[in-house]
Image (cartoon, rainbow, N blue to C red):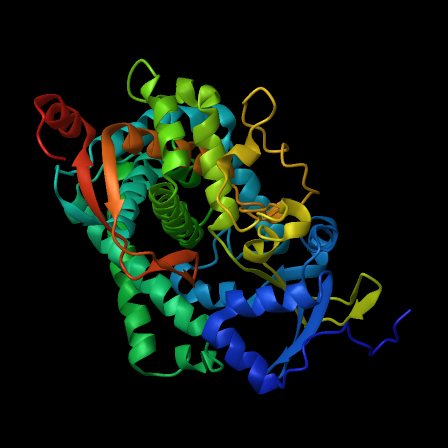
Length: 451
């Protein structure tokens, strides 16, 4: 057995070199570490000991078996000044109590009732044939509309939701800076960054206050009404509502953007998905969801190759033993869906390839278990008691929106985006797409017009 002060092997980097690599490209850094140390690795980043947890059985130990021994990473703590103490950042008994209170809003039957909101929002996009759009921005506005309608029972026009969404965008960009900065003290000191954070929070809260006031005047049967009737304080209600309106659309909007880009770059997959949705009697509905096997496989594969949350961090609050190594309290643990989802040990020699068919069984039906991977070789929404409470909502939203858009539109994307691990896996530069209405394309083809 290793001694008490022994550490698992890891890269021979100086603490400053570890920080430099993390800051420059954390996904490449984690991929390199995992390739050389396929179970568990130790490195130092500045003055911190960091353990990269690679093997699925060890990831399960951290996220599922020993959740009481760890807390969320420092990145989430830095989000608290903006989001407040909501479900994402709360710990221990407070987290359990709040999760129990809001769980009914994410019951399977309740989620299915949101399906018509998802397809209606996708069908009502203000797109025109021949238009060029920034897909990331369009998907952000779309998922924000769906989140406010489903979670808060309001259907607000863009001019009212835009300020809140702009504030969330501001937060995500600043979160990335804070995540890679050695001086989170910037947030506690007067200066431009703290001022910008404050302005974003105030704009966000002003928009949210209007939504809450609307729901107080007109009680409904939705997530926000559940909060208002829960016995939580006004501050707790604001914190939870703020968390869900931010997290409820940010990860899904990026997942949709990545999926549309992947389909554009893989025409065979696009043709197969389009054949599935074209065979429907009309626009996709929640009733069609169980039969959208290839669409769901496409969503699963997109979240494997481009996971919505690429890095999940924890810190130990008590000593734990992991793979025979004693890890002291206060050290950092890092798991990475980006790395594990692309590991050839679990996904084969074509692990880096986008192949939705890997999720289909012998009869062509979608099955999350079909690839034969071990548990926690795939965890796009986390795992254990901190599994994203809205994962069922996100699966349905991703599939119905993709099916609706692909049925109605052809997209041609000019440039390949670069993955930017911020609050979620964002795209950079803008994902510009040329839109063609499939109805117009078909009419032009019938008339012999050039396409």
